[in-house]
Length: 492
Ligand code: AHR
Image (cartoon, rainbow, N blue to C red):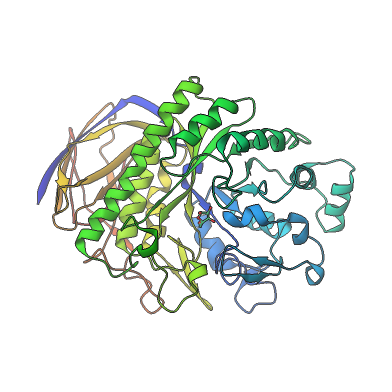
């Protein structure tokens, strides 16, 4: 057992934790949309307008605030007009990025907006800048948001939707430094400005435009982009960073079968997210000292080798307690930097990479990562307050801080989220609290006997949230966190 001191000062209010920090991502990739979220109206799996009821319910339970679609790399080869109208006559295409499978476009704009309405979340569209045209993107916005008479709205009505939808978040391109066109930042910046100029605010709708930002530590991209694009053109720039345990893309490592050493290097690589956010924020502070442009981490999560026997282009992987710790660390980091980070989207929601939910036929399992989002949801819309934990280290080479934490206050309640990242030692956390009188505590824990534990179709509850005991007194609280655990404490 290791002892860790912690302190909270609720008088020191920091930034609002936007609900969108708890956002998600769904791409036309593998079984994320088809045979995942969307099974079609004729499926005997219970669905509403083709979307699985159990998945919608699960998403609602964690208060999913925003869903990004249709990619990823897919976005820059997606032509939205192929995905509207009578399904049987929709044009097919090859999904060149993800397994070369034939995309029948049966899930398109109407289906996506209907899905978001069912979930109760904001839609976030990734527009095609790589292989599309300015006119195509401009017309998509008109089709979706314009309330008047126009060729686009005439088509929308013909396709069954009388009233426009609201669309706030619009990404203009995806990874345009890579799969989205292999561009230089200067070239992309010019293209971005051209495209965004023709994405208009119709009928009271206000777009929150997001430019393609850097890949991981490509600080040059951020710098060059912001030399050319300012707050008149964009509300946010994206950042993509994936945790790859080995750090080698060709041999990323298995989702379930990993050494202790690889566990610690996975967490260490995850914590690098904070270095990245600080580095890009430093550059943003220089170009945008008034903090008008947000950092949008719209792809994050663990990326492993695919499960044996599955299509390598489908990126299907299991999800263990290790992923739960990764999720908790990332979410605590996003909370702590919520002055600049205003949205983050886990990759991806269903059956792809670090998924919330896995499906097999009619069955669905909630992953350990899902349960972390369930525990952390109380932070949404809260106010971050100052917190600090002693730097007690874990891991063979003492490579990582043992405790990950963040604290927020909302509606007279304090939410404290903690992760004991050690797989060797329990942590006794003694926390003093200033500026908050509430000492009535309730707590829940997510843990398992091993960091390799996961939920499967024959054992869906192996890793689940359980009640947890915390002691409070006039100074604060004390809790013993078992190794490899995630805890939420609510004080009121
Ligand atoms: O999430 C999978 C892929 O990762 C996305 O399509 C792409 O944007 C990123 O490289």
